[in-house]
Image (cartoon, rainbow, N blue to C red):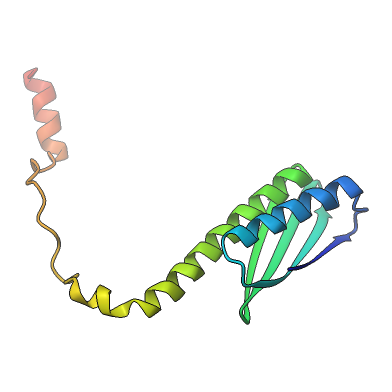
Length: 132
C-alpha cells in the first residue's frame, strides 16, 4: 500500500510520520486490498486535525478527527477509518452470501420473554405516596 503523509500549516516531524505510517499500515490488517492511504495533518486554531483518505478497490473512505494532540487525532482518525472499512467489508461479504440471509425470516421478531410493562409516571408517583 502506498502511504503519503503531508502537513498543512504544520511541520511534520519524523516521529509524527512514523506514527501515522504505523496507523495507516494497521488498516491493512482489516483488508489487504487497500491501494493507497493519504494522511494530512493540520492545525486549525488550537486543535490538531488529521484526515486519512484510504482507497480500497475503487472506493474512497475518509476518516477525519480533531483532538488537542496530533497523536490522539491520528488515533481517532484511524479508528473512524477502521470502522468504515469493517462496515464496507461486511457489506461486500453480505452481498455474496445473500442466499443464506434470505432463508431467515426477518419480518417477524424473534420470540422473547414477556417482560413486565414499564410503569407509567403516575404509577411511580402513586407507589412513592403509598410507601410501597
